[in-house]
Image 1 (cartoon, one colour):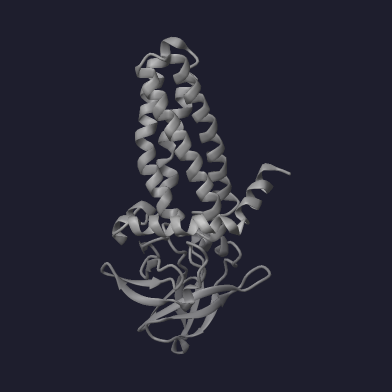
Image 2: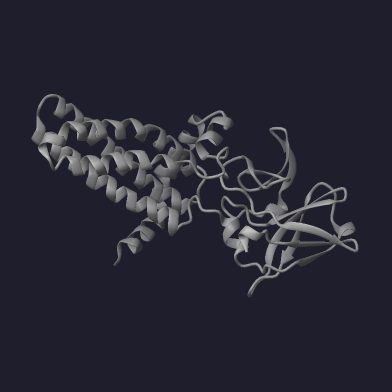
Length: 293
């Protein structure tokens, strides 16, 4: 059995939910208000913040492992370990925020990811204490053990990101299945005012759901799968969120500006793919923007 197959099996163990779900609720309650949680998601950035911040502790600890090989460079390695420890705190907060809004399989693996990261962090802290007391051999043993655990945890994080699509834009994936040609979405008069309606775009083998919102003579059209976890945006609502008219996902409450598709409220951090629109004889025509074709 490959490592990836093993991780998939771990993600399928429902008995973990007895521990994972209470932990999720506790973390979700702690990360308040909502604006703070959106800050951690990276909604303001238009990209998940967690993978950005983890570069610091991972890079610092990996570099420290190299410097520790040369005795005269070990003081610099100690500085890097301390830097990684400090940077791990905000990285962990962003990861925790994202974890609370994921599907059950991702949450199970994410819990294992968090346990291993916590163990690695604790070992690095003890390693720093040992180094201060000139117990160099112990400090080295602890830090290399921590690096091994952190590397294993990073492998789990990669599996969550790439195999389980945690943090990826599900809207962008759906957009790739759609033709780049103009698509006729029907008469303008058939669209309801001020609420999303389901329309479909041509795909290679299946139709791609779209969410169309009419505001007077203007129509905003989006890929119908929410960028967060593919929620049906065409079943959502149009609401004023932080001063902007937004399309709100019915699953997790992510809000996207109607004018641009930019996220205004998480858990979504990635923008929603918005189509170009033009009118032809009272009919709504839409196509993917150039950067999505």
